[in-house]
Structure formats: structure tokens, C-alpha cells
Image 1 (spheres, one colour):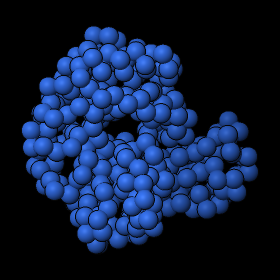
Image 2 (cartoon, rainbow, N blue to C red):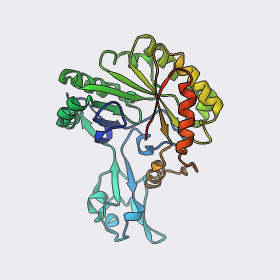
Image 3 (cartoon, rainbow, N blue to C red):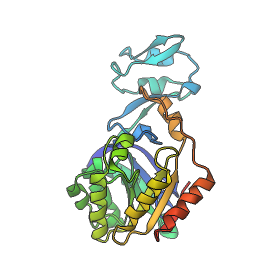
Image 4 (spheres, rainbow, N blue to C red):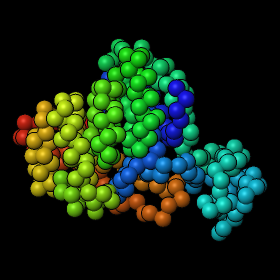
Length: 302
């Protein structure tokens, strides 16, 4: 249990990441760059600095604490220079309001499992378990394999929340250790998928078909992003695609989460948050009805 990796959160008592009460472990790093990502802090594989502007009282404590000169006054506020920063955390410790944080930390499989095992009684009572999410957990396969094996030894139900964008041998190496795959289909058209996420969907669909053919339990998740993938043509194409997968009938549709906007504002990124609003309940219901017409069991999450 000495394998280590980079995680950015462990969320206890999660109810939207698989059946029952769960603990969701978020691994850092993702091969996609979705324009609507609600966890933008998950994209980079390494830890990173973040600043909550609304909490900053401009006391200058972070500037005094940083011996690398990575924070300096600029236009009356303390500005962070990522080129100088070594993520030592001195500014985080010095900040009296919690305005600064380091997102992502190295943790061992044993440390993670110690958190997971705290709630075994709740998993047993609710039919829950552990979900490994991200980012993309398949980017840290050695750590993931060790965690899944540890859960199997403890009799803990496991779910893998994944884009399925990874070499097949990585997915194949996990067989027998994953009870439920939560697999995203973000757009049915590969060119549109690449425009919206930075990668096409050919590898994703190939892996999905292989998992389905092998009889793995799969729930397909479709994020509903108004103006990007919620048109009737794409919903119909997605419905046809899912219904063509061997034995796959469960679909979760997930409304766009606007929380990513505030997260992105805290990160030292040049990106602007997308001007997108969450879909209405009526639109979500219409999409659910359209997908159900393909013989799918549709659940609206969130």
C-alpha cells in the first residue's frame, strides 16, 4: 500500500456518484479539456496554487511569507507569479482568511484507504461504496489498481467515473476490480467532441464497446450543456449510440454545473469561463423523454 499519487479531494457522503452513500476520491489530471468543466482544478496533473479573491483582505501576509518573491503588490493587490512559485505553501499558512490554497497533494494508497474505510458501515447499510473520479483516474493507473484491489479485499463496492479516454490495456488491467463504470459520452460526433473537449471520441467509444461486450456493468453519463450538445440531433445520435452497446440501458443526464466558473476564477489560468446557463428542468425532462424512446432507463442527476 505504498503507491502514491496526486489527489485533490476526498468527498464523504456523496450521493450523485453511483448507488447509495459513497466516498468519492478525486484524482488529479485529465486528458480532456472540456470548455464547460465543473472541476477545472482537476485538469493539470500536478498541484497548483489558487487564490480566492473575495476572501483576500490585502494584508500582505502572503507577500512577507514568500521567500521566493512569487507574490508581489500589483494595482493594490497581491499577485501570484506561477513562474517563481515552488508550491511550498508558506503563503497558505500565513493567510489569515484562507484566501490562498494549494490544490492537489501527494497521498499514498494507505492514506486514501484510511479515509475510505471510515464509512464502511454507511456503504453496507445503503448499498454504497467508493467512486474514483477526477479529472481522469485512468491517468494514474498504478495508484488506481492498488486502491481498487484494497477495496476488493475489504468487500467495498467500487465505481469508476471515467471519460474512457485511455489505452485499452489500462482499462483491461482493472477488470475484476471495478463493479460499476460511470462512462461519459459528451458528444456523439467525433469532430464536435474534439472541438469541445480537445480530443475526438473514437477511442472513448471503442473502449465503451469493449467494456460492454465483456459484460461490464456500465452507466452512461451525458452532461447536458446548452448550446453545445443539447440539440435534438445530438441527443438522438447519443441515444442510438448507447442503445447499440451490449447490455447497456442505464443513462444519467447531468445538467451543466455553473460552479466551475467560480473555481476557474481562483486558478492562475488565462481561460475565460464559458457564458453558459444551466438547462431548465423542462429541457432536461424533454431530453430524458427523447433518450427513453430508445429503450433506455434515464435518470436526471443534480
